[in-house]
Length: 125
Image 1 (cartoon, helix red, strand yellow):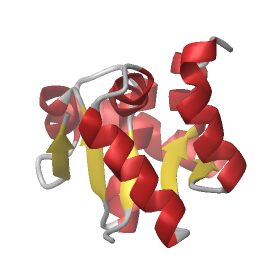
Image 2: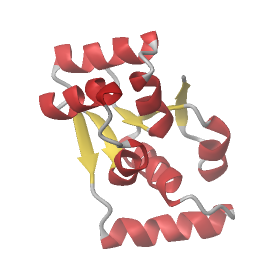
Image 3: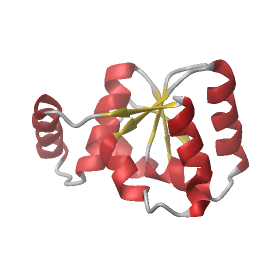
Image 4: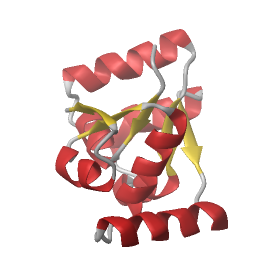
């Protein structure tokens, strides 16, 4: 399985029991592979709702690796935002992480991510 980074849309699709996201989650758990999740994405979507059971399952099984927002990353995000003329810190963190890991980014927002990095490999859900 290729390395993947999830954005907020991917987690929302999982909450809504989207069959593609359920299949990806099952593959991650079965293969003992972790998807990468910027800290800000988790903050954007987490509400502690019972609907988020599938998200919590991934966190508890280790199938989601929550990536911190360090000072170094914050500076790189700021530079990316300046270069792209955009302002969404979380999307920029997703884009940077996707680029760094040469990962497929699972997203519902391809336009904004391609504005940040046209070379990103996106899987649209």
